[in-house]
Length: 212
Image 1 (cartoon, rainbow, N blue to C red):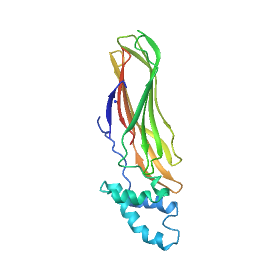
Image 2: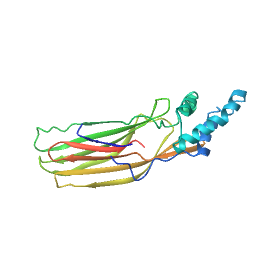
Image 3: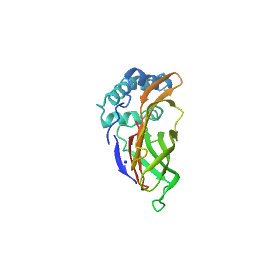
Image 4: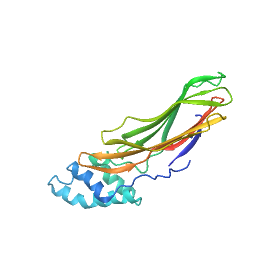
């Protein structure tokens, strides 16, 4: 899900969220030993957990599926929550009372949470720019980064890096990143968070994006 906000930021990315597969979700369970504990309870739980994971993967999950997975925290902490509300925020040092400025920046983030409510990662884009009160005159830097990431997060290549509008009243920066979620033996999911930031010559800005 993505939302647009103005200075205080929808459209889904063309690269959709990487879906979990049954095989790779099972790898998560096996890696933590939940299904290999040797107990009768674990043996009986294996099939319902597998089925619940599969329904989460294809979007047909029920509340009971999520409750079952949350009862195994080792698994739930690695599975993105499909019901989590969009969490985002932004900050800036720009000051609209200043007519012209260089070194103005805007930082936007989107958070990705697990079924336990823990943060899997927080994806950011920051732009630094110059403006003259009417036009955005140049970019000084544009980049993406993570904060609060778990050890399962594997930072991969950028899939989108676009900018336009310099020399006009508004300029835009769009960055998307490939991220893998991995356990020691296997990477079990691919996600593509993205953020688009628009800054204006008068010191205002807007943004849109998605954490996955």
